[in-house]
Length: 309
Image (cartoon, rainbow, N blue to C red):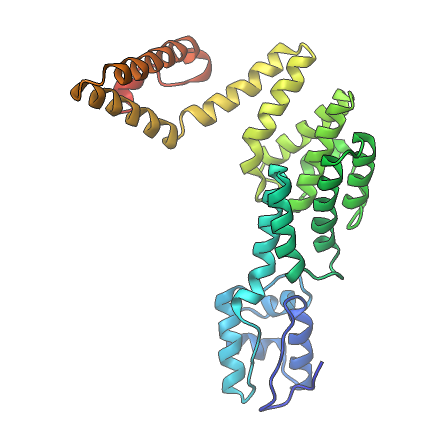
């Protein structure tokens, strides 16, 4: 890395900002408290950034830029898009992996490769898992796929006991690997192991142990309902279904859909579209019967037409 002196450009890598910040501070003989005062943050924040336990947000990066310029250092860092592009690429690749669509994975993987750090083990987890999905799609046995998935997880840390999953703080890629492992165990006939994994992920998500995980609750719940049904555990199956219906049916988006359908029915009748009116009304009547059937058990609004308008 070039020396950092007044008037000389300070180039920053996308990853490793904390190390560069510490080197600059030590060369200038600044304390963490001094630097924190210049950018209006706590000294503990500087410490976390230097130890790479935290990456500064855009607002703070701009303050660093302004402070360095005022002290005679041209802080010509890479652009914000370049800085945060690798984070966006990770998210997009993970979403493609979840959808299991080869073309989309290939497209997002190509984008990710351009910004990834090959020395970063978590980046490599994303990269290798994406390739594993390709291999599975092209004939890799479920047993081999499962073994390789475990290897990918253990690139960063040892695979946990599945009983401990509810208490773990997982990274997005770790969560996805465990999810994939659960699917693989189900396919290979090891339903009890699959249930242990999915139940752990469900509890992890439900208790907000992993910050992003609640979005996976409905998906995990549906899988758990299927697993329990296959085991003839009807009470547990019903509990997961209760959760799904309670979460899904009463969502604002769902109510808006039914509102739109009620209006569509009235529109069809107003313009003499008899076929459309019959189809929409038949659907709404069937849904109303379903709501009546499940009302008490799943706490779904009984009078949809009245309560949702």
